[in-house]
Image (cartoon, rainbow, N blue to C red; front, side, top):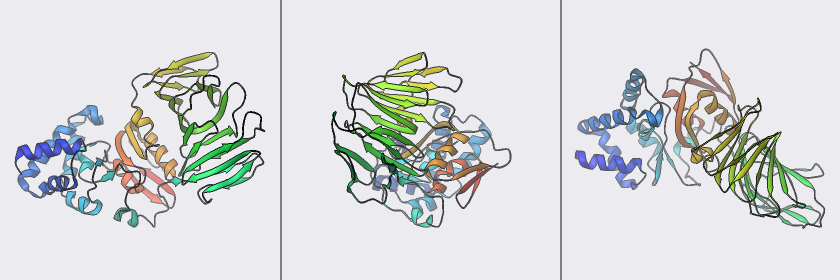
Length: 389
């Protein structure tokens, strides 16, 4: 393969434009000693782009490059295969090329089973899925991941319908009917999608809950959130929608936004994708526009960040992790929630930032490769992940 062909294929690979045959041809070039020099130059160039991965220590960059080019590329390709319309798994210090030649994931919402998935079966730490419990007004609990599709409960004139795996809807009822409240709760390792009585859609992330009425009446639509959820709200100017999170509220007419309010996070973050929302805490209030994020801190102050990466914020809803200069603790909190794992630390664990994208359906060991690429170690004992220096 000549230099120009290699450069064109690599550029198109990074832009996710290669066919399976072209990607295989590009990766086959690793077996050619002359083309390995081209790969080394490409890796060096990508590592120098600190805006992509935040790595600035020359010694660490050289160590990462040597690890990439150490001869494990073909083994990785044979193990994971090459999927059409691939997205490279970006790793901590090496982002881009480091995992471009070691792991591959598909953008499809229904990825094909892989050899890696079969190998990880004995692990107790496994990827999450569509799991949730619905608590009805009378206290009855329905485990949704094992319930059959169709009508699963009736509350007055309202029917609760399980449409398919990971989706719940409410039908019937009206302004004059009796209003009761339900709570949808996901465990660690669970997620679920809910269509509210007004047609609004809510995606509930792991270890989260949403309390809502079986029918919206009065002057506003109010729900209460714990954890994280992504909302697509049906517009109704006569009845604004309000999300209550502890002593904070997000009020909208019709819009798309994400609220992250886990107890173990440093702040409650509301990120707007479309429309406008008003975030209020006490006497403080801000109006957000698309691409802005409001953070409410424990001390009570409310700040706004412009031009946030909304793709990163809603990556969980779209089926993958997206770490962008995320701290080690932040990475492990997300992993712990989705894989239902307890996270502990031993020794003086280095203070590092990580970047990367990988499907949430991946084996936990594949996700944790981002730690290994920055010389952070771990071991798995039952449902516990221990991070070590």
